[in-house]
Length: 606
Image (tube, rainbow, N blue to C red; front, side):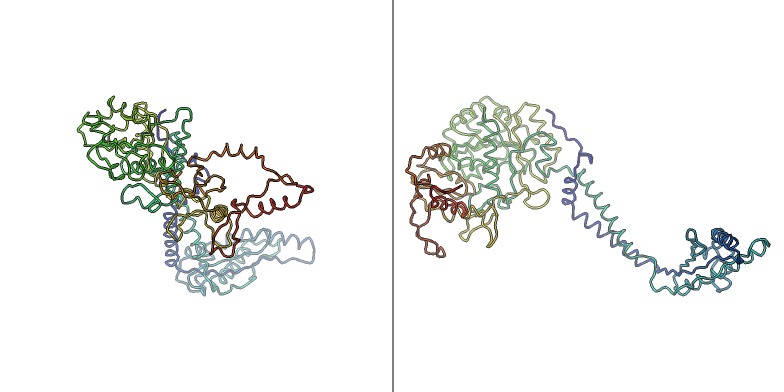
């Protein structure tokens, strides 16, 4: 497969893509629109106010009592009205107006300030005069009709058509003094400013969209490179200063859930040949690969797996700082034959099932050491008893990660949303392709939780903190409903769990989580998240379902098993709730239905 960055053409964009682009660059669109509107309003203020006055005249003919002569005269008047329109727009009429009103304006200027119209199939002639002085506009309009009437009289007299009735133009209506200017129109001006600004803003957004090569969301990676995005990690400001392993005190619930999702996706990448040695790298520095390796390892340990983290960044090692282990001894010493791997493996203080193999002393030839047979043998040896996570340098600055990709079972490439470009990611994937490295997928890091490119991490409730400072999920406000209600009910009505023996593993109590309640034999319950334990072993839901289907307990007349005996619960501040509560939490409607069917007896009709 060749990883090529194809240009994102407008023909490939859907309506949702256009809306997302507009949301991404909405600030620029608003700024451009505001600027063009301000410019339009400034132009409006600078323009002189122009007033318009309208006067009208009508063409009439003098006919006799004969009906045929009257109809002929009316048709003649309509025909002459069209002809006299050109007369009204001539300089002859303009000179008469200038002389009559004593205006210091040329005939051409007056003709340009006057418009003449003849409504269809009428004998009316309308004259509209415009001027910066409303009084002048009124006087010019009235004088224009008078001048047109005089000019028409001279034309008719010079024609000498004695066999036709005489034609003349009389004033139909005087002009009214205008009070409001007709130009410039403030609404039209502002509308043009807003519309033009929106068009320019959208053009700006589309140009930015095509010029900006930064990766914004997982869909771009899957579309351009054909690789699955196995994890999307939201922005967590607790990692801004430096990379560290998150826990219940310094990590948001969203980031911890995202790492659990990444852990789950890795388990299903290849169910027939699951990878045991995983290389985590990036295209360029500062994309968060070391933080991803560390927290992924802690999340896998929380699920009960043995994990070994190997720091193969022999140029700028950081794993020893994240896990707080002894620096200066590690991988380079093992590969050089100065130490055995069992002597330099260090257990993490947070869990004995997570071991760290630091980078050791920085060698002069990192690429040669990482590409040696000893390195491959070391990884295979570690993978016999644990899942191996390898932290490697970025792909573009050095070749170490590309060399290591041949010695592992799969590679994850970490990209940073809003920072990694498609060009750099394409070149990084191309380097892995040249050495035939197996790329399992891409991890999109630092995904914003707000905005057009955000992902929703609170689907099953809102994330927050309780009064004790622990993260909470699904807590609704008073009177509100939603998916968080079931979790709240389970947390309130689940009976107290029996103490867990020291040293027993708590499932899913790793990064960002506090321990889930464990349930002893004979008790029933459902934790809000994670997996319940049963006698210190993972609870087998499939086998429990089979056991329930073979229930041999005595049943009542309606065929229902006896209701579980209540378990005493001591809650002094529960707001007056019953002292004896059922150990199984059920929604109110299901509980009422269950009790109703039991009390109905054999005659109950379901």
